[in-house]
Length: 305
Image (cartoon, rainbow, N blue to C red; front, side, top):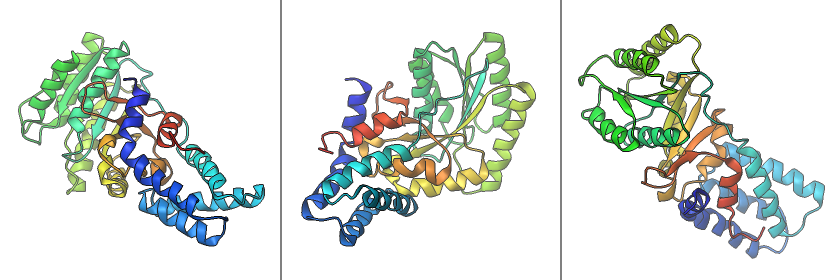
């Protein structure tokens, strides 16, 4: 199965929920009026698109309908697809422009952070990159052991210290190992606690200082892993992390297990940060770069718009 087919299959719950409601709505109206727009707005919000983004969509939609003189509700859905595709923006690949480049991965426990790092390592290795993992989540019990399993599966090396060690010292050692071994990318797991923002900020700040001191010209990405099954709650969580760390991209996991995939539509607009990777399954090859046009095509697949 190709990755587009996996995205399409993974989005089935979201497609059945959100698109099913939209088609039912269009079929239930014979004209485009305020009642129709009100129902459409409610459907988008119920589909986890988010209130602010929905308002933006509705403003654009009303303008388009008015200017084009559209009177058929089913034609409105075609306009909706174009607006949603546009909102998600262009593909935003990882910045791996230096050798080595550094990718710090953050996120609360339970979102699939360590698993995501393992899958990302496998993807990058498949792209011809030499990858080194740094087990800098020294806070969670057995985090390094879990990462070691993924490093083995992905066929990459791992730098680790004892549980409870200073995360920045792990990153320091990984940078020096990466330099000496000619690594293209150093992927760093970090602690997932958010209940104490000051601790998180201090820890990430210390890691950032180590990176900038040891690799002053390196391309650095800070990726936040979010669980798609939490819908709009993932956006709230992202805002908290954004205050504590300069996020450069989002990785959205577990899209295959949720009807709340509508949250993807507004993430870029809500946060000003692009989605860079999505996960649509449990396999090692089920994490891939996020291509908005592909996502939109999969979301609307089978809809006669």
